[in-house]
Image (tube, rainbow, N blue to C red):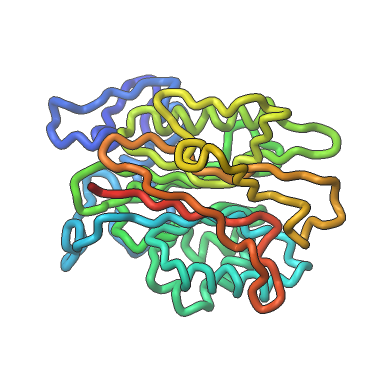
Length: 316
């Protein structure tokens, strides 16, 4: 695949179209993390949808923009505990997907059984998935997936370099049809345990994401960051990154892990934390709104021990 220290050229990271404008990426950035497979092997798991890298061709019939002025992104930590009403809970999350009709869906804490449940729903075929059924069937740990109604130049999935829990990230190079580069990433960072709060691992994992996103003008991360300002200090918003909730709803708590309101966590000590977030840096788009979803029981069950998030960005 090449040597990360040799300085391969990745023009797609910045959306540049001309050879002379290519960005040279060297050791310590994206290539050093192994993500050079974006160029050499087509950006990952996708098998039947358009591949990434230089060989990508926009699907026939796709109209640039297609009249849309916004893009809706949903993020949900689905809770991998299969002993707690897993079929009913996944059906509830599926109903939220049908109701909100997001363009992009980011799911964390997925198991191969949960993946199979989602595949059985009618809405599944509306999306391209970052992980094929064959690869999902071989998973032995929880994983993240991205679902997209938009064409995808490619996907890449990778386990974090420093993880004891098998935590990972997944990125998609989304073709919005507007010739504006948009990289969307989902992730699940290390959790806090009774023995270790794992702050140093979460920080290292965020730094890994920052290296991945360093050269992209339009970046959105949505996922289970498990970040606790009381233990981890302020979230490191470097290189122009912003927190969507802090930007759009600074006066609201936004707690999406809440042991007071979520009956799945009622017997635990009081916690109201914003473990799940949208982090972004957008040069060509703008954030319009962010909201919590899944806060009410659906057919008698709460979808997860986390609440979900919806982010809407504007193309204008």
